[in-house]
Image 1 (cartoon, rainbow, N blue to C red):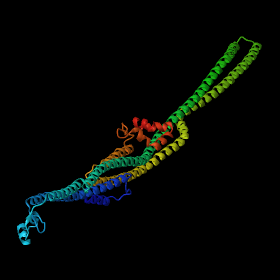
Image 2: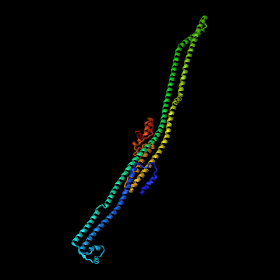
Image 3: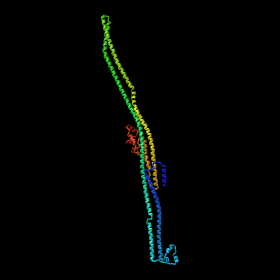
Image 4: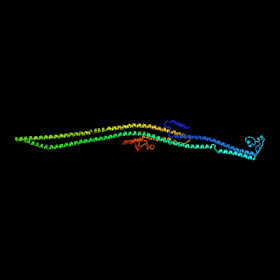
Amino acid sequence: MLIKLIVTAFFMSVVNIAYTQTSGIGNVISIESIAKRIEYNKETIAKYKNDLILLEEALKNRTQKLKDEIAALYKERDNIIGDMKVGARCSQCNGWKSEFEKRGENFEKHLGDVKGYAIPATTSELESTRKQYAERIALKKVQLQNIEKGDNGILKKKEDIAKMEKENETLCVSMTTHSKSYETSVFSEAKNKHNQWIESLMNYASSILIADDKITIGKATVIRYKKDFETEAEKICEQVKADSKEAQNKLTANIDINEQKSQIILTEQKEYLAPVETQLAELRKQKSSLDWDLKKTTITPTEKDSLLKQQQQLIIQINELNKNIQQYNATVKSKISQIELENKKFKDDIWELTVSLSKKQEQEVVKVKPAYDTKIAAANDMASRATNELALARKTYADKAVVYKKNNSDYIDIVILESNRMLVAAQSVNCSVWNEVRGMVATNWNKLFPCVNNITTLAKPYSSHVFNAYCSGTSSSAYLASYKSFLSGLNPDDIKAIKENSNADWFNLITK
């Protein structure tokens, strides 16, 4: 009892927690009650055994006294019968010699004192005396037999002792059974508590995973928008380049058309001027012939006047033809110049399209860039906010982990206290109790808690997932309902980003 009080006082002094008892406290109280009953029985048994010694000693004394009395009666009978046969009875008082000797008196002196003499007994007196002693001896023997066989309290004491010893054996078995029941009840309660704490921690772990995934999504979205912008920019540049090429081709086609027009004009010029120049040559030839004839000294004045008139007419015709040729050539030159001006403009436009292509491409790309900048800024903002969320989630998880670890430690302290109460109670009466539950509770927590802890740090980046032999994938992933719900609401691009940032085993298992 002293040991029990010391152990209880010690644990009550070091345990200052929210819990005061486990679900198995009834078994603890029962075991302590059983121990008290056993102790009471043992004390009673010890008392009864002491009583039994006294009773047995008293019985022995009473039995021996009766045996002595019976032996004395036999001896007294034999002495008296002997006296009666030899005539050893006082004639005055009828007292027998053996009776005087029994009292320490001298029979002969008595005879002298009373003036008596010794007389013998009659046959009837002998028979009467024998019968009297036989009855007295028989009575003593009956008394002895009654004492030996009768209810003298010893048998009852022995029965009570045997009953209490049997009861103590049964109580010891009951104590062991209660301790096993305590173990079953407490371990079940502990597992329920652990499951609740683990589920709560899993929710906080889910917040870490979600925040981490949001960072991943944000960064991946930034990269994706940048790639989308680059892709669209390339398309825009290609389109601008194609449009420029098409415009250049149109301008080039216009140049070709103008050059064809020039060729047609020049061809028409040749066709037009050929007969005119032939006619002009003929007129010039005729004029030259007239000029030659006018130089002759043999011509008459009349002929000369006629030739001069012809010459003048030829000069007029030649001048008209020259004027016509000049006007026609001027018209052709004007048309050709106009075409050349147009072609120069076309070529300048082609050059402008060529040298301004990059600038035009840049101008068109700039038009779509703000939309992508807004999207990228939003994605960066999401990643930044998620980074803050992750820091907060990790701190919250760490704080809660400390709370639940303390809760478990406090609970184990209570289990240790109650287990020690059972152990002290059992040891005080030399009974056996199950005393493994404290280790079972600690082992169960040490199996579950690292699983959650690893999920917050090792689950995604490592090549093998954390749901190992100690961390069942099915049971552990079932706790992550909020995280799985988060995943189910994501679009394929976000899922792809998260999957690329997670090992395959983890992601495939968590999304089952």
